[in-house]
Length: 270
Image (cartoon, rainbow, N blue to C red; front, side, top):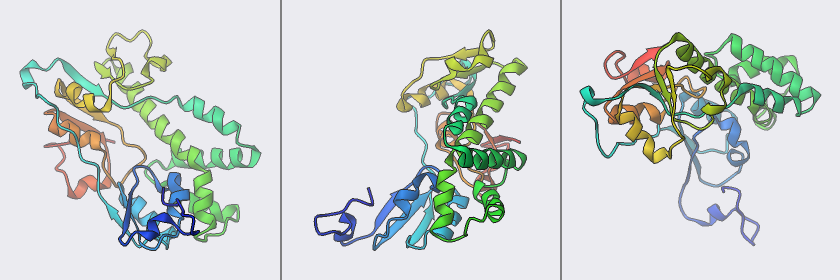
């Protein structure tokens, strides 16, 4: 942890003569307690251009911020296209958005009210980063836009991001499943998704370890990706699909514009 200290009342990482790089895999709002630590030579690697801009703006203690998507994984054995038995696969987990709403109700009246309002605004503007939506909202509720108060309040509003991510994922899978398209789901929690019950076009596999997901992708023609709320980054599921010899189908990200050719190595949906 960046905040680990020594008996000399200093940060342990400051006793090392060299930079410290912290690779964060979620929105920075989830990592506020680590990011605010005032290390002498602190650097961040993140997955999304918007996350990079957010850290640069609100954490002046960070010396540099770098964008580096996670690499994909290669299966031990590829399956020839004509031998593939799965049309479409999704290996992500399922979280019931309603369970998150129940959690929000336990946060207290003020936070629940603010979070509910931010959720409405995020749903109305799904392509905007949460921090942009909150900046407008902060003016209305008189939250100072300081490097102390703004990121702290964003951290308190993490359920907005958690709920919206879960809602989008549920909606995408529901749309596919109810259309009659065959789809195989191999992530945790899908057996609890009530809208899938009785659908013969949906195959639920037992959850597999991350290291085994590429084996399932190798047997698929298309691997579906539903991004977390990253609209300027990439997910390793996309690279794993490519390395596994199947087409990658993903929602949009501005990062794709300069790195992929749509219709050749990636397919996108609105």
